[in-house]
Image 1 (tube, rainbow, N blue to C red):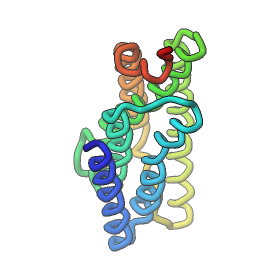
Image 2: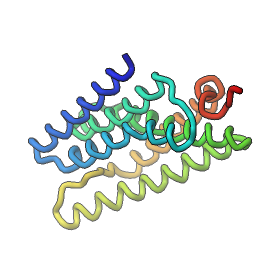
Image 3: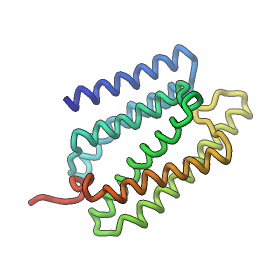
Image 4: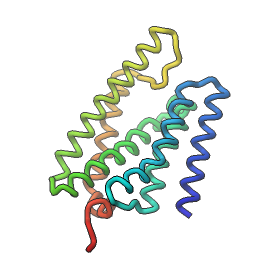
Length: 182
């Protein structure tokens, strides 16, 4: 069942790609391509790090790619909470990865998760702003949109919310990535 759901999510992202092409929306097209590729990351991680994703973890990570892709078709502009949802969702993925890695190597995950979420979040906001500014300068449609200072602040708030969720629930939900059963 999980494989069918994953496949359905990939088809939905592909639909975003097609709609993006039809609308001549480069942001939707580029993001859909990257999102489809990202849905295969669990396979790469499993192979590389000798871990196994639970079916719900695969679906959860793929769903993050879908929500972001759909956002590029207009949900970010039309649904006031969409950006908050995607930042929280994406942050839980990043936080979960860092949490599991820290636990796997015997480190306290709290400072690791918080520093990585703030650092990567800062880089993301800088990249988003730069891409939007350069696209505006050359009269192009930006593939990422920056909505101003209050949006950046809210993005950080929801990134931290995702980190806190993982810090609270990580031991219960992510043991399969760092505990070895012999």
